[in-house]
Image 1 (cartoon, rainbow, N blue to C red):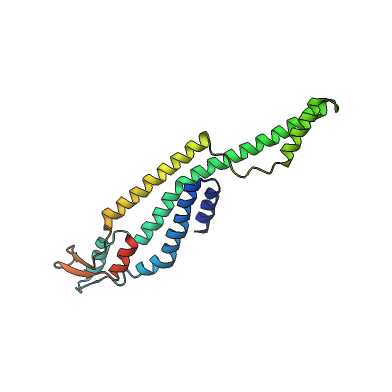
Image 2: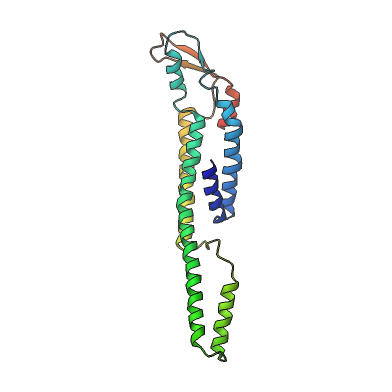
Length: 210
C-alpha cells in the first residue's frame, strides 16, 4: 500500500484538477474504507458461512460456489488494475520533466559560451547576460506542461482507467450483483440434496458492495 500510495502521490503532482479529485476519491474513500472497515466486515465470510448439513466437504464446496473470489481481494485487484495506467503516464511525465531540465541546462551552457565570445560593451552581450540571469533565477522544473504527446498520454490513461473501472463493476455484478442474500441454496455434490447456507452480516456486506 505504501508503494502504491507514493506512486499515486507522484501522479497527483502531474494531474489536472479532475485527476486530483479522482486520486483523492481512490485514496481517501476506497483505501480507507477497504483498510479500516470493509476488511472487518468480510473477514468472517468463510468461518461464519454455515450450511444446515453435516456432510463432509459440503460446506466448503457451497462456500466456493457462493464466493468464487473474496470481494476484499477483488477490490484490491480493482485498485491495482485501475491504478496501473497511471504508471505509464507517470513514466512519460517524468521523462518529459527530465528532457525539459536537460534542455534548460543546455541552453544555460550555450548562453555562457556565447557570453564569453562577446564584447562586454555590446548590446548583444547585455541581452545574453539578462537571458542567462533569468535562466539561473528560474527554479528547477518540477511539473511538465500538459500538452502535446504528454496530453495524449494523459487522455489515454484516463480512458483506460475508466474502461477498467467499468469492467470491474460489471465483473462484480456478474459474480455477486449488488445485493448479498442472507440465504444461499446449494445443490452441488457432495451435498446430498438442496442445502440451505447462511451468510453472516448480509446487510453490512450489501452496503459495502453498493
